[in-house]
Length: 484
Ligand code: BG6
Image (cartoon, rainbow, N blue to C red):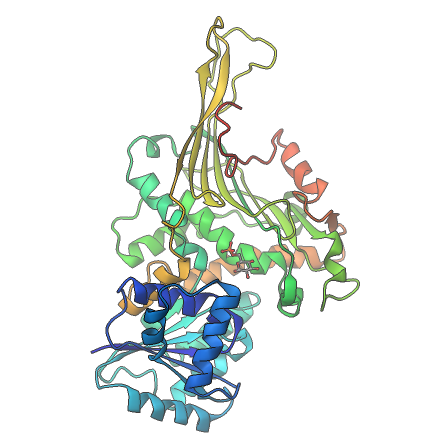
């Protein structure tokens, strides 16, 4: 028995850039079952041969030279294509027949929605019309790419449409941040050690900061981004999942629901904001050259940057601020979670100008230098008792980190939904984001802040932390700085 992966939207960017390269890596590592096939479907008029060529060219253009070309030839032989319109039941019937010819009874089948989100519902419904979700012999699963909905109501409608065909246990809603190695490392780091968890709470932690910045702009994705903006694109999914991993309680086991329950409980505990609180606790910004990008409206108000101050109302985190920020066209590509610990309650060290104790910080670096930094105080040599902050680092080796999609595709093939979002989690996440969007779009909203391209965002983003006598911190990427 083997498996088939059916990719809808197979001629698109995601397939070329991420899905096929990840599948090829899995193939090279011997992690895919023998005989596995990939069947692409899209409107473009390819046949098997021209589709394989298209993927080959895409790989070389978007990823780089194809490693082990001999293996690629064998891998490519397992790739097939069916031209079709998602609106046509006849075309789905052709796909169905093609699958029957390729498959044996008992083979599992993974449907991957890699299309524009407007097609998700119709594809699910077409599959339902032909009973293609029914698990007569082999399993059937569906992977749904983000964005999952545009707001809470549309996400609920999408869930309803998908769940009218598939059972929740067959649905895999992807958030590629959860597939990142360094993001999964948060679990091992927190719960595989004894020395961090006892201090992982409001008694010892002053604040948590999560930054996900990108140095690139919207590029060719303005059509999507104009309707989305940074909150829908990055916060509803990635940043809230990172926050959940930092704030969650230890799960009872590695079981998928045990872990998903704990991540979801964090979202339940996030303090809701009224419109006034949104204006007080959030900043939205746009990079200066955004309105000159191709496809962007000249007076667009779409935010490309956001900074939020949030609170998790529970025993562990009450009143500890969680500062979240993300933006495009910023100084650097950086994904970092910083835990800043409280200062010692009393210092008996002599106060010498510039030598005040710096609170300990722990940084979990997702990008660029995948690893962990811990800063702590040490004595300045040959001084009476002056202190200095030093930085201890751990980094994964370059090349050691697989692409997030590798892990996620493999988990979906193995039927492990741990790193995928459940319907209730998505619903809660939209419940947090919707009121912020509504307040930003209201008449009383302060005007959108602007920031120069290639900076850390608008001054208002700095001011948000300055109100709490704080500033944005980052240590990731600062290699070799032993003493700060
Ligand atoms: C995607 C967003 O989900 O994540 C993009 O749609 C963003 O706008 C991307 O660029 C960032 O992902 P990564 O893995 O490069 O941090």
